[in-house]
Image (cartoon, rainbow, N blue to C red; front, side, top):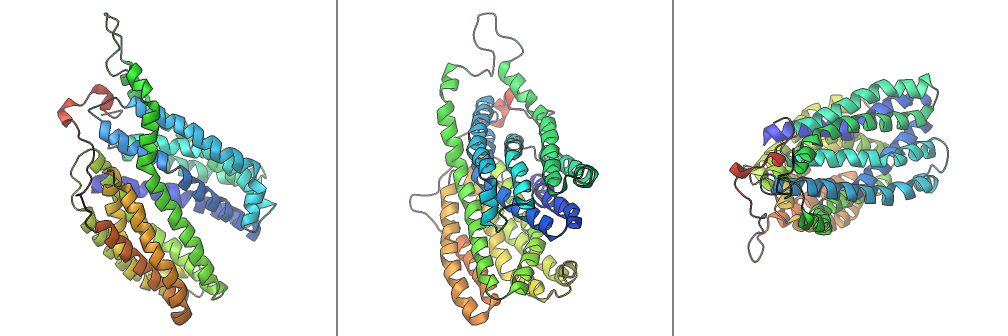
Length: 438
């Protein structure tokens, strides 16, 4: 679990956190308008990724289930088709409506619209990279996606100053740098799948005219629609969970905003600091999902998640004052937020880690239902407690919601637990089933 989770943690920090921070750092010299533009752009991209998340998640699980017992290339081919459909459905309207989208965040024109025009046009590149990484993770390879994320970040570090200041492109240059870095990284990453395609086609066809070993036959091709449905059904609960958390996060910002700008700033700073710790849970979730899909032992994700939550809470409490002090001269709100998050992080860590097992074993809908049940408790509590305890009531509502979600995810279900599809023993693994380089 830790062997798989550590590269995922590094990948998440670099791909999810660092790229946005690099852009933000470089455009900060252009003024508050540029900072706001990057913030709006990365927020919209975050929501767009939530819409697409079902595809790479489903691909990871299906590749893990089929590795060693069924051809893998049909899954890759179907994932590629879904990528094309989602890219067109999300990127094209986004490009056409980039100014109205910016207006939703209070920035109808200028830097925010410029950034969005480029970043939304580049979404197909971003989506394609997540599908390639999803295939590799299904094969049990989390190191290559980590390497890809590090390459992308290194390219952004070089391209940002060149395009923003060297060519005088400003905020649009930051978006172009990110898209270009992702395109180069994608070209490198696609080569990792060459072994799968070669295995699917076979070195040569048998003399009797029968299909080459591992090549997709007519029956397999005819199952493309079924595979597409299975990918989406498997991944949609994760996408729903992602989007639900994003929307509830926005609702909490609105509640906190009622207490003043300083409270919102403190909440935002605390969230950014906490994100580095929360990525531990998502790394454990991906590791649990990969091992469960591949019918490999995953230990006890619940205990790992709870223990990880306690460890992250302790680390954030120790680092709260100096870390918050890096962002503001008055860190009291952010520090208070991080202190109270101890009650939230422990159940939340358990919930996220267990979610990987539920997702890979065909019970992703249960995870989504548990998440929604927690939010059904959290939001009313946030409004009620905040009127009594101020922002502390919002922090307490987060802990209550996470606890309810964990309890719902672990509650016994009538009829017994669902199980993942039966798999052939690992000794029957075909040449197509081996990750490139193994």
